Length: 178
Image 1 (cartoon, helix red, strand yellow):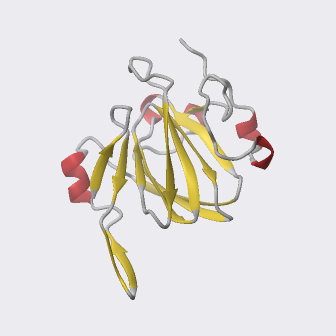
Image 2 (cartoon, rainbow, N blue to C red):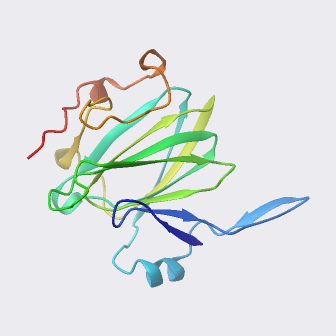
């Protein structure tokens, strides 16, 4: 697994080694020993998966307090634009974001630490999105940022009329600078 640093400290792209031949491919998507060697402070407790159609945007979500989550995200089928926003007030990159194309083809993974809002937009006809978390979901401790906050200026790659949101995500607040 190759670790690729991004412009934001503690936010990494992970590129697994893929071995392919005429039968298909093999890769280690997650190996606990390797992960503990490179990221000893992270202990994943749960795997989640969602399926969505083109234009579905999920996010930008995060949890606070003891329920803040580190996520290791990847796409099993299709392609998404994945976005992480730094919400750590003490960080020099506070309110900055990094985006990455994750797809079944490129097998790229995104390691998003606690303190980041996260969201993704499906670019293919359908996508299956898989992710590990290191803390359980807690509705009382969830928060978010509206996807089109002009202060963040995220290029989502699709026109606004092509994007589909849950009712809950339509009501998320703007990111207030503090």
